[in-house]
Image (cartoon, rainbow, N blue to C red; front, side, top):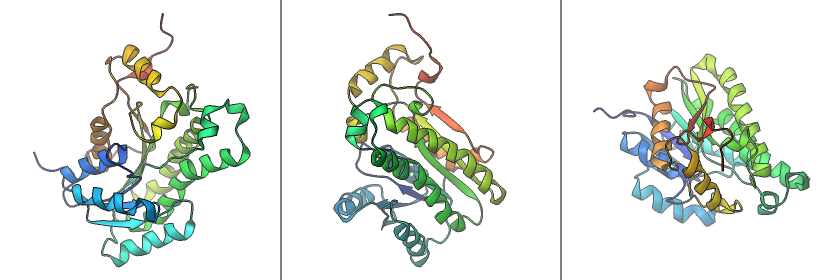
Amino acid sequence: MSKLLEGKTALVLGVANRWSLAYAIAQAFSREGAKVLLTYQSERQRLTVEELANELPAASVFPCDVTKDEEIVSLTESLRKNGHGAIDAVVHSIAFANRDDLTRPFVETSRSGFLLAQEVSAYSLVAVARATAPLMAAGGSIMTLTYLGATRVVQNYNVMGVAKAALEAAVRYLANDLGPTNIRVNAISAGPVKTASARGIKDFSKVLDSVERVAPLRRNTDPAEVADTAVFLASDLGRGVTGNILFVDAGFQVIGLTAG
């Protein structure tokens, strides 16, 4: 079978370690023949991301703190200067909330914590899309990662659920804005996966147990399944899909009340 992303260049933001969904996606992109570019948030993360880039392999690694407009602009300039002026796919896998705002009731969310979660988890997609769209002259695919907590109350997800709701709304508005230039914007709603960020959610192991017990496939989500869906969205197979939330969660989103 021919490689689905042969000849394409993909920028992946959010690779933090080998267990992150962003890393699984970058692996799948590399497997399918894409030239993969990675970013890191700070100098503290640089060495780790460079090591992961060597493993994939990725073509280049660039700094980008999405809370700083100047770094997002600098990313675009660096891509051009390093011969990556044409991008076909962008993966936004970035989210953050203060641990305190995840562990206490949502009604007790601090103003600063609310704004931080929105800035990093939702607005950053808008900023990244604005910066990278000019590099997608031939069209392309922008995608982000979301979760069921955007539309349903998930215990201990709290302020992150509200941020993900904003992220999903941003996907729809960006899809409308960028559609005329043949840029598609979608989100993958992954089931709970054991990532470093997930460990910040109280009683996360209980969430995994609950999903495995009641999801139609009676199991949790494999990161490789999320990555393969990202390949679909980045490839020509997904050329007619935009403004959508694609669930990759073993079917859990269809379940309502269960007995016991």
